[in-house]
Length: 215
Image 1 (spheres, rainbow, N blue to C red):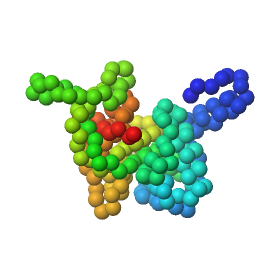
Image 2 (spheres, rainbow, N blue to C red; image 1 turned 30 degrees about the vertical axis):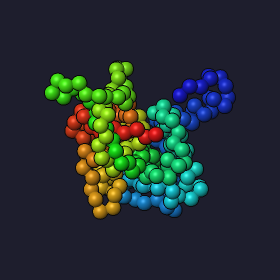
Image 3 (tube, one colour; image 1 turned 90 degrees about the horizontal axis):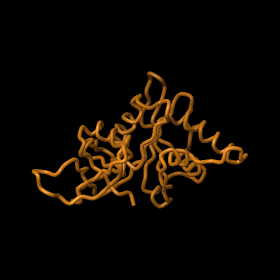
Image 4 (tube, one colour; image 1 turned 60 degrees about the vertical axis):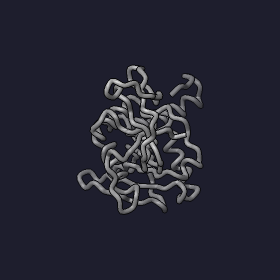
């Protein structure tokens, strides 16, 4: 997060941002929240908020949470029109802090990541992102039917590699469509970062997972 050291306002904003990233984001109960699962081993839980069903106070709190996440992920702010289509899944600890978040949205098509040309033939591709080492990541241009797009995945820094992202995505698969459990291969990821690519590949069990354009 860029800021000017010595500037009172910037110092205050940076301190608040750093605290949220390191310690998690404060969470209070909301009228329109839905608890989807509780984990008795540590009393953490996964909550879901639908932006288009939230009141104005809840929407402001959702935007505050997303502001921290977007800043850390260096992501473009989602429009209200986009958020109206999304479901926000939050991993909340017993200390009432948000330590993980997944934003999911309905989609109709996605594209498969390309690792190599099939059968030695040249196949039309397009760039979808970059890996951690800066190399380009490509996908095939032929669209594939898809139903659930993972727009954001975020876990607070001290709690990464503890299975929180996996727990969140498992719940998305179980609850995104009423009465239907999605397979890992049914999910598509929105132009993932290098770390996001590693997670998506591990979760889906393939280096050629689905991606989609969120625009």
